[in-house]
Length: 336
Ligand SMILES: [Zn+2]
Image (cartoon, rainbow, N blue to C red; front, side):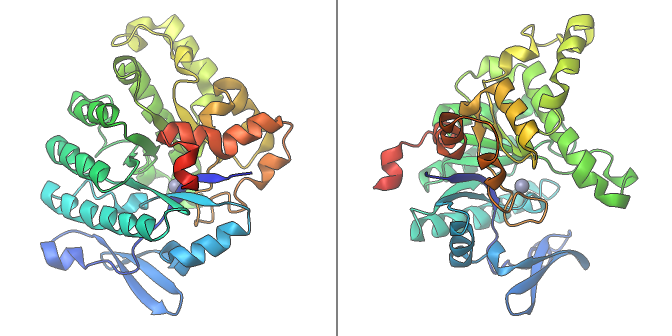
């Protein structure tokens, strides 16, 4: 069965020293301190160690083939978003990363599909880079769950979503700059608590802000099975019902009406939760995802899905139909 992994991250092997080039800021750079490994440095601070499966397309293909996966959707690592930087500098970083992803997909058209990154802190530049992403062969873009702490329903971001709909570019929303991060450094809480909350924040902002209502053809996928959104949909709907004066101020459509309108990936690490997610949004809206190559990801790439009670058809949807529809790719395109 064809497997498309809709959520994976990649970096170029070499990154310019942008802090030196621009003369400020803690941009990420790589220290290749031993063969096959590199340290991601944020300024002088160690961020995380990565392996060659983070940058070497061939090593990756070999690894994911072991889990019968043929195609990865690749995008950058959220720490590279650089929304805090000066807009032109973020554009520079974005272009570098996007051009690299295009090189990878051009060399391995059967194994990779690419998503770009945008300088979201400047709407005009973001739309310009989005249009370029489309021209150079990317199928969509990845953006963060908030932009410098502004929610995605802010009117200034609307033209970007509008352009995504117009150009037919898919959107992956990925949690980053997690709320409360400063106050929960211990126990990896920004990743375990902050990330799921961030994704729910993004979905709620887009629903209540009327983004999906105004852009019905916009195709959005939310990482990590939508974070805590789906497991708290009862509460969210109840809040909408009991306090419309607080919740329904920009959009009168109930949140449950949007179940099945957007996509989520399968990164739940839990067969029962995945079955529940499928029940809520339908198997055509759940894309196989791994978060490869990071340890918090599902590095067996959906093996647990085989063990669920989902039907063959539902598994087929998750393994490829849902991603093909999200990315608006025809089956034939991949076989060509
Ligand atoms: Zn991820």
